[in-house]
Length: 176
Image (cartoon, rainbow, N blue to C red; front, side, top):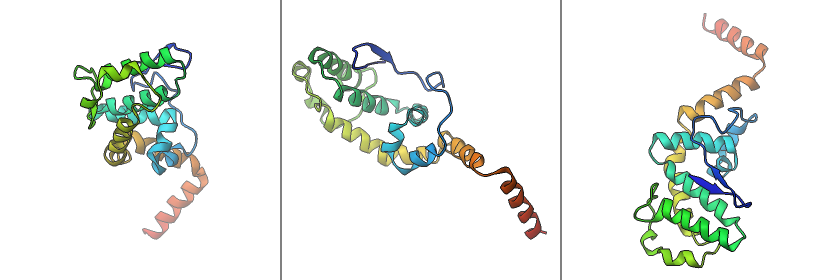
């Protein structure tokens, strides 16, 4: 799926195969991801890992819709806004949508509203999807390997090597 930037140029949203990021997150990024879904969605590495998780759960369309709405809200050009609104509708909301999201009220949103788009026209639907992710998928993500593996790596990198050996020595002393 293409998402349009403020320059009007389509940008592909890459699949979660690692091709769209370096695979390195800044130190303590998992702590930020764990603190809130908002923080997770502000971090490109966090978004990619969350997308990978949602793809496994067959609900990646939720985060893609949320991201498309965020991009849409930043659009100022009226013609671009109409194009993006139509793309969001056709991709996520219409009965024939390729990646349909399950939100209340989508049946009331008709193609006619796309003629007079405004930045917050999808806000209620976006909020529904955000809450669905926050109270459903996000908590499972925090228990998944896609979150726990980088978290462990960060914790190991944070702990100095001599502290690890001291802990192991103390463990051996107390366990004998």
